[in-house]
Length: 244
Ligand code: NAD
Ligand code: ZN
Image (cartoon, rainbow, N blue to C red; front, side, top):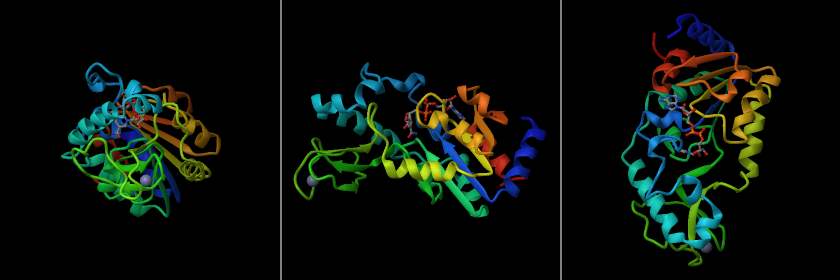
């Protein structure tokens, strides 16, 4: 690991009054959560893009819920890793801190983060397709088909599926966090899924110092001031200065 680069990032973070972090599936990889683009992306020969869609749910809600039950079963025993807890630690040091995540696994909250913008929803929440009520549901497995306690309507995962709009509230909170941040830390996201893919350049244009942590180069590279190649659970604790 490049000690000088790490030291440089630590200094930027120590001085920054507004810090924003953007995370993707890679931050949870070391907790054992599979990334969609990894080898574990397939289930019964379906790709996530074939199941996490409004069309798939309309055609076969039971199939889609079975897939979510499989994912709930895998996620339930997993714990936050050193990257999640280091980001929670950073939040306590910075006056104005926002963590934007594309993850739906809820591990940032369990790791101690508080000001979280969940761009894609949360796998532990359900939403009624009839009355719109949103509630937490941690059943593993969830009874299929799950019914709304208020109106009896079919429940769906409270997740943004392929082809759906991101919630307006989450988007505006994310852009407010990107605006005027001194440092943007991008961790474990492929830079392929919009709008997160353009957030590094949005923050960079606004004057932020952009740092990326990933095990490989991503399309963000052009907007990044410091690229740290490595595993999130190793690199993030080093740059937030939690250790050493
Ligand atoms: P992605 O799967 O497209 O990319 C993951 C990125 O993480 C890659 O760039 C990879 O190189 C990097 N990476 C893998 N292991 C890493 C590690 N140990 N340390 C640092 N980086 C590592 O994920 P994405 O960009 O978040 O987009 C995928 C979509 O899939 C999102 O919409 C997200 O909602 C969803 N998803 C979420 C979860 C989750 O909640 N944990 C898991 C899979 C997919
Ligand atoms: Zn309802």
